[in-house]
Length: 134
Figure 1: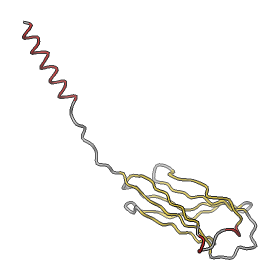
Figure 2: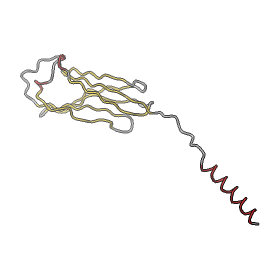
Figure 3: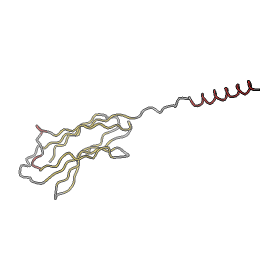
Figure 4: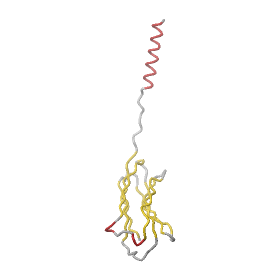
């Protein structure tokens, strides 16, 4: 009887061990890295414009805002020329099949808020968003 009990316990342990040690069938990794380079400058002459302007960089996928970050507050007349561009690079990990919306949002004190946004199709993993402020 003791031998029979040991065999049953051994078999039950073996079955439980095998069922607990199964490998999870992983879903394929559907995440990709998106690299966005934001480039800001102006070709206009704003040398007399004393308004404060605050620029932000922005990125969003279908579900959430990935980036909404102020770059700086400056006078409109201080926006750099093409020779002195402000360049910011950001990298995000998102779903490979999800398009992004990204660009610049800016607020001019006493005037209002505006933006320059681009859509980035799914599969385009390196993007440059260049904005010549006007």
